[in-house]
Length: 112
Image (cartoon, rainbow, N blue to C red; front, top):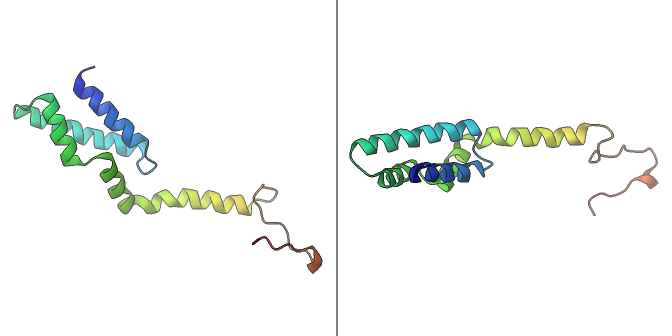
């Protein structure tokens, strides 16, 4: 594997460690990165130079995560919110709310 392929793999691994980006989004970003590298190579930049310039133009992992979170953050939170709601709504689940009894002596303040 050439140096640029290793760098792209490392770049992709950093993005994959994020909870913000899906695999499809990472693949799309990788495609843009590769296109940019190819275009810069035509301008006679070395592979290393082309990769660095392309990565800088696209943005580093932290910048990309931040931008995707701004734009698509709402769709990431719905599955988590839904699973949390289901956990509380399902009877017999470990996190379900106990039933309210008629006898006030049996009520426990769970806010403690």
